Image (cartoon, rainbow, N blue to C red):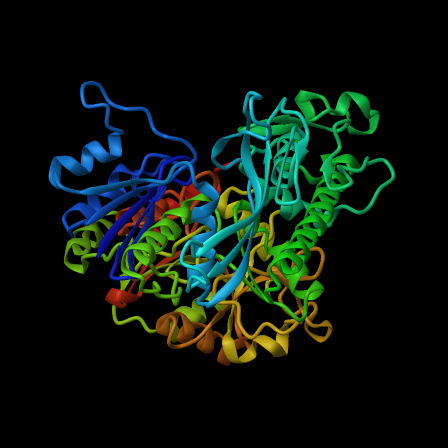
Length: 581
């Protein structure tokens, strides 16, 4: 059974499943080069020629119909090529997509799923017969999951608790369902992100700033009794939320100074950094409480986590420390794009009764055609880039040890927001100036940290793992062991942590060899790893994207392991970029 599932909306995506295995997953922004592109038409076109038995439409609301036929545009496009396609609309089940992705990807036979999201599907709820329905957006959910039904009438994924929220709804509810108008966990993070001069969806930047702050009496509690403090937080469902700083002089900030500190660290205020610290601390504690609630309701020791908050790698490490007796799996594609994977796997399970395959790799981008890419390689030559043939990982490791930035492009792209060695920019983690230097190369804010990739066999020697045996998807910001502090300053955040990826030879042979060669040279089994893109741009998907990004950047080298080729930036390119303010 060939299933194409799509997520229309921000992080628009397409997941193509063949007999329970992910054939490819792609986010539309990688193809269209438009950040957060929500309409996965190009993803659909990649699947059409392969053959589709079912089209599953996710998202958070039903898409408007087209003239004449009334069909949504995605169904209409597919029917132009495959007129007898089965269409399943699950746009009213957004959280179910998150649950299914996390549960089936985990490989657990049974688990409790905890979903922490901004605003999922909009649902009407009748609490009392005869009264008008209340309307709210999904925000937090708990599901009891099993690969087998205990009773025939029960679903594989059974809702046991759900919270809805809206801007003006009355507070009401029961043990398993609540609704109110207070700001919820993710919306609080969005409110602080907006206050800091970022977009609502750029919570990762707020997470990066949080360790610079501390607990302060000048910052009011953002939550009271588990609910957003209405004196501080103003809801704006579904788009975001705001800080009501008019009530608190310590939070006042003029619009003309709102973003000055993004480029000038001396302009950073105590209010900004301490508010970021507060939202990280309070929200991760509340999600921990939800995990406890899930264990109490379901009795499960296996926990899977998804929803936008699942990308909070600081919080993920906090759960690992707080719950040493639980088996916790955080879906590495836990943002909205991952719901396409979940819904495809759920429909497969429901229709075939076969359990879909667990996640074994995030290298899920569409297969590339090496012959076609040879044309793009010629473009590099025409640009005057100096090329070297028969390049080995040891050659590249030496360049990195000499403080060169090396972009690596190989194989299939990574699913989700983390670069894992196929679409990465690599650097020397031991350079004390490395963070500032690479932030400048990428055009990012000064305070944002970088990740590292470590040989699997050295993982527990370098990090306090709290029982974790691996971190292949870079989902945890972990403490360096005390004796390793200062060894990798370029990837050590201000709080002594690093978002880390473990690498084995089986997972990525070339990348593993490169890190191993770097260890031979430096004694450090870690390389500095950041995504191959510039600020405000999607990760590169095609070789053409890689060439264009390389050509307009200050990156020193472009490494193409599939062709054993290495290209050095032209002197003219380097001179022009060095003059960029």
